[in-house]
Length: 189
Image (cartoon, rainbow, N blue to C red; front, side, top):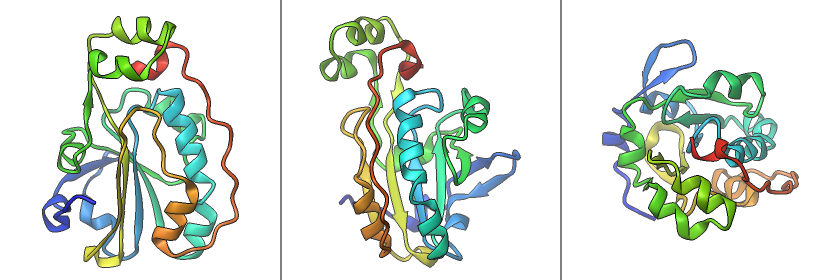
């Protein structure tokens, strides 16, 4: 696990769903928090991951653990919320400072190509813009300790739900769903 300076990263700001600016550390001041960093709100795989992680929300809530989703931009946020893909609070890291400070990679069309096959290669290669990778940060109450830090190696990487539960010390009896195949350009925007 990389050495994460929570005091420094905690000063980064996020924008809430209501437009309010909050410091990241405010999310862990009063309770442990599971921070899920999405690549894109419009990405089919990210939506599936959000739905999967949301299966833990009742157990997390019952144990006093907050579930928070963070996206790198507002594009696709409204549709994401309307689709009910995520059961926690949602924030936007407009400056992408948290993504950078947590070591999340920046994917470009060329860096994603080896992970893609067939039509996906053509679709992704036609995109010139870069996308952030995602991951997860789990912090204890008060922010003294990182309980888990996960960085995606490729766009479809996700932690097993059991590892998330174990990191926060809860027992959850949820079952992972079937992972979708991203076969259109929604995953790359």
